Amino acid sequence: MAEPVILLRDLTKEFPADPPVKALDAVNLRVERSDYLAIVGPSGSGKSTLLNMLGLLDQPTGGSYLLDGIETTTLKDGARTAVRGSRIGFVFQSFHLLPHRSVLENVMLAEVYGRAPRKGRRDRALRALDRVRLSHRVDFLPGRMSGGERQRAAIARALLGEPALLLCDEPTGNLDSKNTDAVLGLFDELRAQGMTIVVITHENEVSDRADRRVRIADGVLSEAP
Ligand code: ADP
Ligand code: MG
Image 1 (cartoon, rainbow, N blue to C red):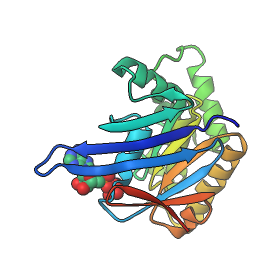
Image 2 (cartoon, protein in one colour):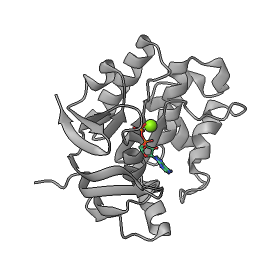
Image 3 (cartoon, rainbow, N blue to C red):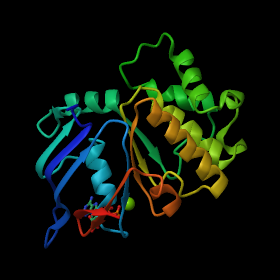
Image 4 (cartoon, helix red, strand yellow):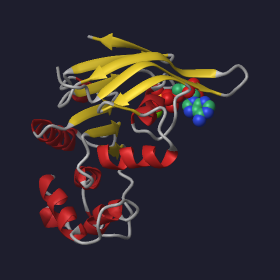
């Protein structure tokens, strides 16, 4: 059987406080390649904490996380950053585009601090923008585009490092239903190309399309119908 992209065993995250906050309590999860997993749950239940763990943005206090077969919890900072840069793309509700840079520059900037060679940076960014069908918007400033176009630009930026895993925190939270549809259609295309997608969402429209839904309540994860 093929190796899962994500394998969590009793992953736990406790924040120091009095008493300590167990934001994730022994979470077990297995996500296969090309899967589309939706994470639902009330505010404060641990969704963002889980996404931060999956994205190697923060360290768990217990348990194990195998990403593509690599045990990540014991990696040193530099190695963890390298694994993150080569395997994970992030998409956020508020796009996080720089307002005074063109779409092309915004996408190209994703590589500035990485290990990607300077040569070909522009071509790679143009290809990523083509994948999200924004070739006609490369010179636009984000403020001149619709929310849907801005999110597609942010997805192009996330795709630049050819990640295996796309982690999205409320990716359609600022979009109307037409633009939500466009983003979901794009997710379908990316999955057909082998991308694994994990989405935090409050919207049925987004979770209904998932292969699988899990719910978090007080840091405890369970399968959702
Ligand atoms: P959600 O994304 O589902 O709204 P979070 O993952 O942000 O929930 O938070 C889960 C719990 O962990 C909450 O009780 C929150 O207050 C706590 N928490 C999150 N981040 C921190 C932090 N950096 N320090 C202390 N507590 C935190
Ligand atoms: Mg959150």
